[in-house]
Image (tube, rainbow, N blue to C red; front, side):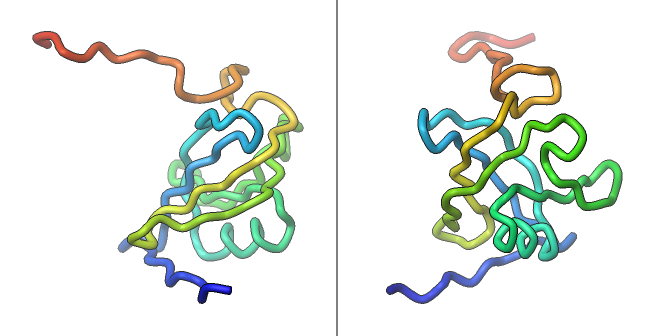
Length: 112
């Protein structure tokens, strides 16, 4: 078994966390984790994050019921981002869409 990678939190004590549907591979959302959110996620196998706007921990799905059940966690090569492979119980996005990434940006053309 490989040694566990060293994680590198930023100057605010946060890591980027990408949630990906374990079955479909669809990227569901990006959020932030502090050390406590990471610990709770590992312990409970349900995604916990740090809300930068509210400055508090949040358990994904605590109010909506749309929990992200974590089946695997991977660190990127720099140790500053984690990938959560999850089984969602409902939409990941607060808009009710399955994923937060639905607004297409145009590429390859002159922007104003």
